[in-house]
Length: 575
Image (tube, rainbow, N blue to C red):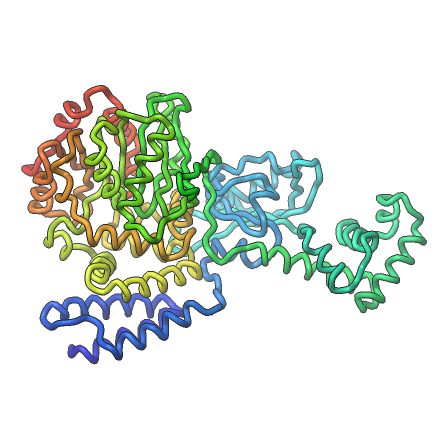
């Protein structure tokens, strides 16, 4: 296909990808053809193509409406009231409308039943059984309680999502919260006094004039007189009209509090924010044994912070504390845009370990996280006793790059050859994820890996994976762009020869695109490198093989991890 014809396909599909996934996938296929054709002709972007891409980029920068199509996200976004969606095991997948505060839960954590009134638990559990395919009670009205002892009505219903094995449970308050800005709006827009604003607030909650009078210790006739003055000021004809207007104001306030970005909150509820020397935030959390042997975890694109409770119990039983650092530009850690991502990451790791007094500890990295971690090990030889890595770096050898699935290969190629186009493609991907939910990203990130695709459609996996997606998307498209450009422009061989501690790789051979030469290139990085092939696992190995994962972390925390890892080395022969 001639260059200009491919360019037209790229432009057409890019415009279409603003509104649907089919356009995005078509765009990626066109870019893949463009990259393949560019190997035989100079230049990737000419002036005409660049101008069209800039126009799309300008539109993305405008205040475009986002239509939420993901049924899980839509369940909490289509109402301004507090809401949450639960996985079959009762873990919070997503919240909206201030649901975390209202129900006293955190995303990624078990919801429990403390927010339910005792006499509503039976109905709630009946709906949950239906969602799990073991009942027929698809809907219920329950009463919830808050920390102050107040009670509210909520609806509970089962939600089925196409392509997911089991259903989910949606809990949505039937009562809107009265935020302070509602009172402020009434005062500023209609000139209501503080007393009249309080009358409105009580009317919205209690509905009845007699109940308002009892609450205020006033006569019912006095309240009726005040209501008449309020009707005149806000230009409504009845109590019903006033309540309807107050409901709209409460709904507007709740929706204004929702951000368009995918807000991230630590599912473990233990996040701590350190401030670096330049006052930037550096966030971390932990799981396992609180006073156990520390192991540093440096994540890649998606962190494995939200491990299942059974895995965390294994960590506690082995006396291991996995300290999970949010790298700069991810989660609630601030990046330094003027600094290379890998240098920012190395500095963050060193400063973090110094602040917490960590030395000679084991460290674990997943995928792109191996770049700053191994470079930190080379620069600070006394920092780590051993390093373990999950994932093969795509830029280690050309055979590995060419064998990747289309989505990964295309993104990697654009990161290497056309950073401007790469950033636009990622901005479009973020928009699709905002509208269609994390499944859009996950299904493409694990494209070509059946064992991982099966895992991401397991409802039990949705809570940790959605939390991980929010950790990635919390600061917009910039985190993913910086991460991939870091990989594209750095090579592990540049510093691996300086690493003194053992480095052990866990590689899933069932992915389908690893070859003998890939393993040989990995082993050639340095004399301390060992490689272990882990069958029946993919890139989500910590969730698919939790016992082995915890066992290897225990090996890493031991006194002589190098000797243990040498015994685990599968070598190249097995490949």
